Length: 282
Image (cartoon, rainbow, N blue to C red; front, side, top):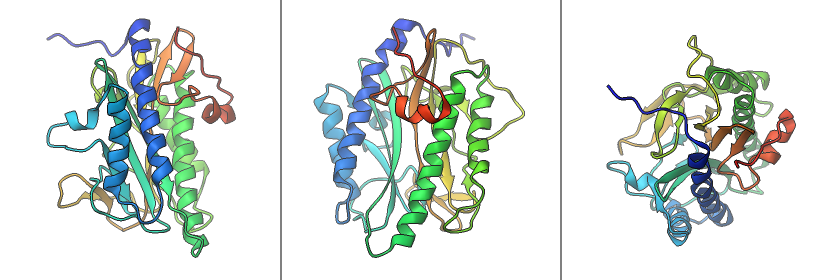
């Protein structure tokens, strides 16, 4: 049986730069709107406008049975939340996942926001810390991709970063890593092989070499790792009701190094603490 290679040519990787940047612009538009009183549907509409205005299409809408440009998950919802009439409240932690397909190539990225709430600084601090840990673990995984030989090293770096944080300095709880939901390859389709686990596994995984493009996306909770799918058949929420956070970037490994396709600076700011300098794809 024919199996498509998971490795792409330099020209194909270059074709992934623009959909990555369009995805980043869509999330920037969401960032500007996040505040108490805004609905998740309004955030979704803003992201879709940017994608369409740049001549692309929301690749989330290409997933069978899904009808939105984003997934928006609030508080105990970790991933795959459906945007709609829900009104954001002060202090909410909000994860927004978004993707664009442009000229047959895909970008995929997610960010977490905390809605300002001057009246509850302890809630803000707890949720900002969860987001910081999740984002940091993502960058640890991306940094590992620059020198790792196999994909399993990415998951080990992600879990190692989270473990190094110990318990939350605000809540005193350990952080949980979702096990059932993982990162993936990306290219002609938003979801391609191979899987990218966010934790250590016995299997070393596929070889990391030039031509590999991955969506690295840790999903972390402020408590237990157990989740369930809500009645809408999409939204993934924590069983214990603790908060969730989701960060994601699409990243390419090429002959010169790595480049974060969904970051305008190629990931320079996020990778700097790890001593990794991204290299543009030529």
